[in-house]
Image (cartoon, rainbow, N blue to C red; front, side, top):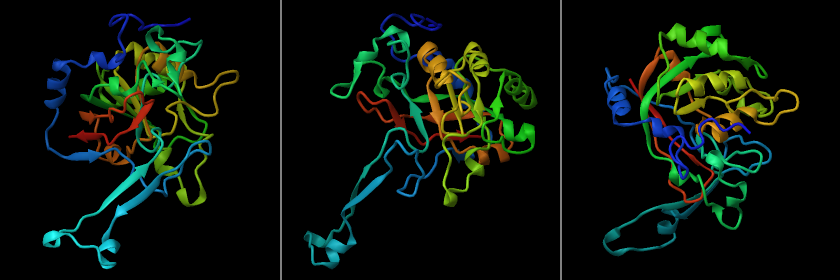
Length: 291
């Protein structure tokens, strides 16, 4: 039963690899800011957002709007306002997986029992509220730039190709990095014709282990699953199992990385903060890169 980072930060730790981000990592990341350009890495959220078939989409309701006042609603002093409510899955668009999101052999990260995640209690261990704000050095591994085109659905991105991307960027990975992998999957989708969430380019287990062994705190990508789909025969989400469950590395999925790649960015200040939803298995995020 693999468990490479279990106990590394204590028997009760529920943060995982983001523990590698300390004050020194934040200071070094902040020093990378040269121009002050801020690039959003998030997808817009709306009810038109494509989602996998097993997952609900976005529901957006207006509770108060201009129509109420047109129909005669009045407030003292002529004050008017609008309010709305959004209902959405936590694993939608650009989002981060909590360490309770995926496990195997009845154990979560750090050995916590799988039965601590229940519909009646939500996640009692490793919920998204345990994840701190993420402020660190971002590293873009641009597979699109390396290949000269987006990777094709079902293409495996292995250890050697990630190492080539790092070498091309002149970057050596270090403890606490947020590594973002641009596969080109998201930017090559034709949403009007539907999105196939069952065939994506992505990393394999060997590539994932190289990232984990390099000391990264977060792994993100511009696809839905981070890892290649379909899975290798006889496996189900093997990269999720190794990174989330064994190494405590959160996965940041559905990122928008085209502008970052086209800007020629290699290292930058990376900032993302999950919503502290108690017992949540993930959270939408709006990460940014500051160049």
